[in-house]
Image (cartoon, rainbow, N blue to C red; front, top):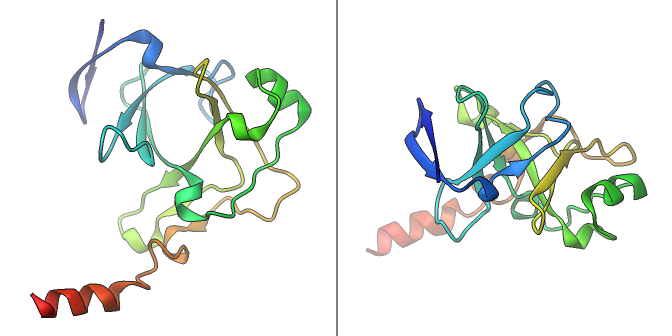
Length: 162
């Protein structure tokens, strides 16, 4: 069991094998290779995480499963990327997109073009660029149905009925 002192989350105890390793680092952070995934909601729900660097506790990334935003999200990796991750198809992998949080939450974005890809068996990951896709680097969270407020009418009705 290892201990990590963080400003945001206090003292964290974790097993090293629980960490995700990015041998090549992430874009802009090539020197950081090991991240501890922290669930932001339910421990059983890996939809929304913070990837906390174990090498620099000032660095953490809020990531979200892109399929929670867009069920039709279909990233295609190259044969080299699949081989690097030790799999034969994208279905064997877990995908996350980095959230950029702004002061005004309506301006929050996700990078759908450069997902983090993780082999859940080996916990080895990489960040890829989906060159042959229409996905964007800065896709507003508010543009997705889950965040757009399309269901606010039903929520207002439910509150009035109580």
